[in-house]
Length: 170
Image 1 (tube, rainbow, N blue to C red):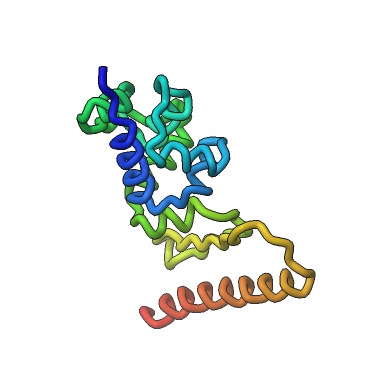
Image 2: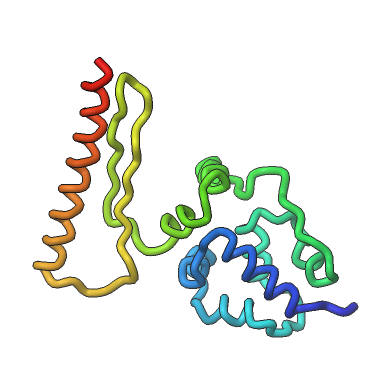
């Protein structure tokens, strides 16, 4: 049976890019190093489908066996059910499906430093603001304090904007 590993590599890279997911973030999600993702997307010819391929299949919500289908020239099928047995992970996957590629990339890359939910009006929901740090780097105490002051200002400004909206409507 002929398997088009180069096609699968392009297919995986395209699916990852459509999510706005950088290789390092994708690798972290799958619990592998970036080099494993680079190899996966480079057209490397494997002797058989690997556990990493299966993890990719699950991560993208493809039906079981989609890797083989793509290798044979077909298209991956979306799994009809939840991607995970965990209700939390299934809820997160459903939420991510509704986000733009840019927002997905921002949420999935880097580390969450802090987050806040600012209430809107009379039980009309809230705005969630997430502070994501870039690549891990050592910050001096002064740099850390500067970033924390910026974050505090941003939180207060968001709260003030939403509070002003309530006052103007009354």
